[in-house]
Length: 413
Image (cartoon, rainbow, N blue to C red; front, top):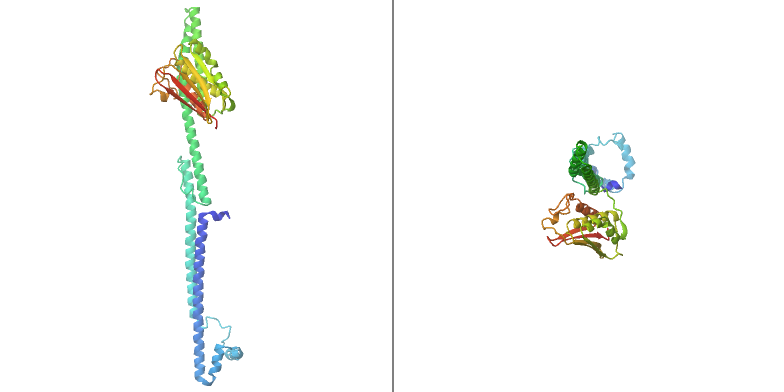
């Protein structure tokens, strides 16, 4: 029976059993004591009768003693008919039997007192038992009221055995989940507020430039066609920058909100590396920076090709921006039993010891950044993408000696 698993029920049954045993023992004691008293009184009466008759009729002593100690059936009918005229027979009520009436009255008093005491014990016991049960229910009720008021503290008693302990455990579990959900909603609200603030801040400069260019084109009729073309091209550059900003801010927002589901597929890492430099070859050639790629083409790893390409592109682009004309960037990869490791190394300006721990921070721009449109989210997005797939990314650098980025994609994830 499931009810017997409850600590309160087992305790109540145990105490009730003890009370019943004590009550039965006391009843048996009183009954045996009454029986011994009654037997003693009867023996005293018999002895008195024997003594009186034997004193009056000494010659009848053997017969009289025999009647009281052995067999009395022979003289029973005679004695019964003799005492009938005195209304003394087997149907005489015990109240009229003066010898037993006092003992009966005392025994009744004892039984009544015993029953009253036992009833008091039972009532007290059940009051205490129910109070113990309902005190826990009241605690759950008070805890529920506290949850409504925004206090998500767990209540005690969740490790006790039984239904009430399980109820408190489930209540605490529910409270914990509600607290997590409320905190998640608060974090989401702060996150949306922060994203909106960041987007507004980042779009402010290109938007102001667009407004200025538009006002010039609209209000200044003296500008030449050549100047007009310059302003139109500048407007297009600002629009392109705004588009790039919005796309990257949306990527960052998706990654931070945890709504991105990485589509991991078993594919060669070489393919992903080559895709990551496709859009950067022209920029590297323009600055006369060589991209050197080495690695086993047959190394496969389970990863999201599109997002990993984005992550590697951001690192390579960062290396290009911090390299000098004529430098080279080496990209290589290798594997072991645990992970596949991609290394991207440049021999550019390098990063100071103080700056290095911050390069993956959101919106961080180093003092040596050469790109005026850089807003400092590329490496942050890279870190979020790689870690979102269970991997890790590290940076090692010394000023004037270049920088090495290490990306590890785990084989077991």
